[in-house]
Image 1: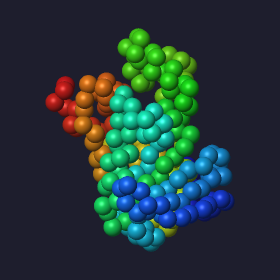
Image 2: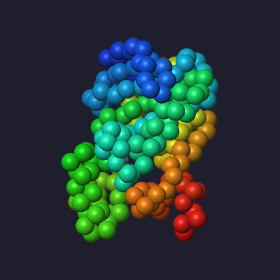
Image 3: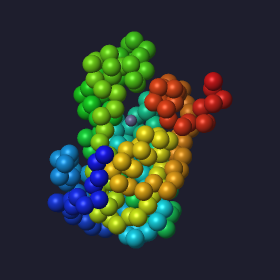
Length: 209
Ligand SMILES: [Zn+2]
C-alpha cells in the first residue's frame, strides 16, 4: 500500500489568485512521481485543519475548458469551486494527466467516436480500443494535501473508489460530500454508465430507472 506522508514535493510555487468566483491561493507543483504539473486552489487556511472541504478533480479539457455537455466534468468543477469559495477553507486539487480517466486526450476523443457511432458507453468504448477503464493515480493529490498540512478531508465526490485511493495514499477522509450535476439529454448516458458500470453514487438518477 503506497504511503506518501513523508514524500515532499520538489517544485512548488504559490501566489494569490483572484477569480470570478472568489479569491484563492494558487499552489502549482510538479509531482516528482508522475512528472505532471498540477494546481491546488486553496481557500482560507487549511493547515492543521480537520474535515477540510476538498475536491480532487481530474483534468477534462473538453468539459472543463470548453463546456462540453457529454460528461459532467465542467459542471462539477464549477460547483466544486463555488462550494470551496463559500467555505471557510477548502482545497481544489486539479490533476493533470487524467484525461479520459488517464488514457489521454487523443484516446478519449477516439472513445467519443465509438460512443457516437456505435452506441458504446464510456467503459466499453475504452475497452474496445484496448485501453484501460481507469488508470488515474491520485498520489499527487495526496502529496499536495499533505504539503498543505490538511489533517482530514470531506471529499466532494460521488466516487467511493476515489475515497479509497486517497485513503491508500495516507489521506484521512472524514466524509464524502455528494457533487450531483443535473441530468439532461446530453449527459444522461454518461451518468448512467458511471452509476451502473463504475459504481458511482448518483441517487438523483434513480427516477430514470
Ligand atoms: Zn469530462
